[in-house]
Image (cartoon, rainbow, N blue to C red):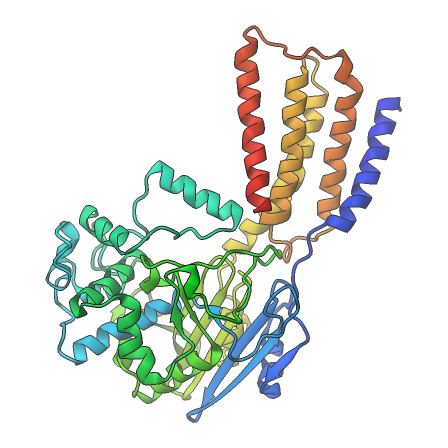
Length: 490
């Protein structure tokens, strides 16, 4: 065994031991409990795996009575979740926007078949002809999000890497301008999930009333139900006090979302288990403003139909009316079953799904409940964890063994090796992937650096026919790696 190989192995071992101290640690549902202890115990039993959850707030409605509980921690500091702790609720807001439409229809302000252009005259493009009930039921043929420019997509990518707010800077004007630019596609009339459609609907109803969307929602739905803790944060100043801290299931804290543009679809609304319990109790009783929004009207597939925002899905013998929500660092689920008069709220402050917990609390069998959440996103996070953890080290080892090599190439490969480690640490879902893989990746990267170092003095600075092109290429690569590290650090 050569001296260089022995050195690389020793360095890899040391780096791996250091990596053990630095390896990612996924949150686990804490032992703290507030509120109804029996409900908290039932929620813990319903959680298929506590890894990846930090805290949960739950509510159950039975026989018109609301019970609430908090489980675990609302932030990394270990402060407990309480039934009144605010969580981002994401797309659960679409159900509220649907109820706002049903309320305005019942009040005679608008009709479900009214055209968008008649309700919001400022919209003059092709989308003006879609109807309000098409917008509420994802049947308007509009895209999921506003078509973006390359700069816009770069901003969204940056926010995903940095953990920032992808909807920052997108206001009501953004939605109106988009509604002017887009045309309904050939799938109009079929259910295709959209964030743009409900956003257009919410602002159109607000424009008809002459107020902003948050004010109209508060006046017509939230206020009458006594949902005083539910707010729509259009600016950071609107964020509620005592709120939960959102994070990835791998543990990385994420910025809250705030903004007016996509607020009716779920970017900005916050609520509590207590408030959403009031919403479900009144909706089940038929006394909530716009309760008729939960009536299934259009078919999505063999198991699911949709009303105004609310979905109705059959899970074996259970027919559940529901909506869920997903933001950068939160997951939410609200659902009820008319046949049993039972309703549930589950709010979580990581990006690990809570749908199985809600369905189990409704009595849906475990196997059926577990299949209700997407397995795609967790495996994306797992793939990022493994790929980024080992990609840099493998690449650096391959680079260090090239016959033709120069110092700038080695430098770029070394910088990227540790940038990839950072990306894997922060973006990977370490609630799915064993965390001890990360120290192995650190050791691999360190071994690559050690091997490259043994050749460093013998290498030319630049080995290329056009040195400045080579230097420019390497410099841009290093800058990209540094920007990735800066984004993660932010």
